[in-house]
Image (cartoon, rainbow, N blue to C red; front, top):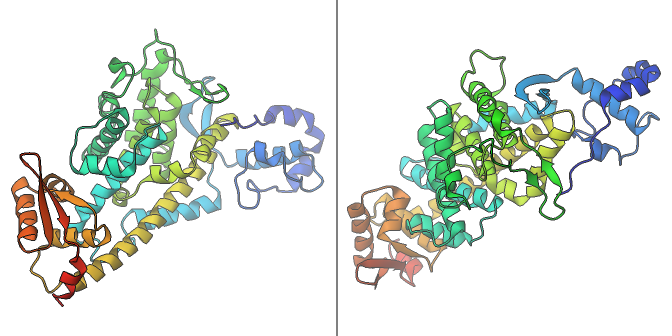
Length: 443
């Protein structure tokens, strides 16, 4: 990943073009270019406007932006604050997120029925666990990871362990959403995410100490240092500022809750307090903040799935913010786009699921199966070679083992499933080959 070119220093440009400032200001140069919040690294390759040089154009943009900046308590190594502004298109995205993320999202009744809610949350937790881990280097197939979590199988290697840890941590975030963020809670989240996956087992659940060499973010191809975090001796003080920002929202200047969650995401990654697992912890912190602030729909979405599609853009949004006078707008804008895409994908996913459930229920309505058995048969129609176990059925629906066993044994007894024994105790179930024909016979 190539680090963006550092923009010219504004104070130097003010000195260099002092005589031209009145005319530059008279042009009222907007903070965006063609509706994009561009960095100097992009602007310097574009054709200049108004017969200005690239530096003059950049100065005009920066003067407009500076007038709209809001300072944050997050400070860089030189004690300079990070800042941000919100262009109109970001306000538009925030409105959509508020409308959808707080609950007014177009979900059909069959999809959001109570019996399906836990299953969709479960699927979302799996998706976030897998893709967040893959962003940090985990390598295993999605199917293996899903089977491991559904069947609560012991992880076979560090990649699977990373994914299982992430799944457990995301469940914990849902439980901790009403708890204030503290040092101990952050250490607990990090420990859950990294236990038995680090080269140094003692690094799980603790920040780096002053006698350790600070872990830097480095481009593995070029070995260029992309980010140098603050000294370890300052971490406790800096993290206390993060906790105050996260918790004491009533006694601070208003920041939109989604923007606050995104800032926490960036802030934790900037401090980089851990030997490893900083990215996973930062994304977990984002979820904690969103759920804490009432955006319950975020139980159903995976931002890491979107980030994984373009990890270079994710990394670049960090670096653009750091290289341009601590302007966090680049990172905020990118994350808003990610959230928007994740919410749109959720609606499409739920619409598709609604149609599938509707079709399945039309065929199954003549049966006397319960909602869990209907869910399994509906899944089997789309995945005819899938095997089910009592444990996976229990985990998916969060029910007692005896209830899960009764469901599967009944489906087998009534001719919906075929069962086979694996070893002495384990039973595996698969749908019969003519499942659709059996459903047709129930019309």
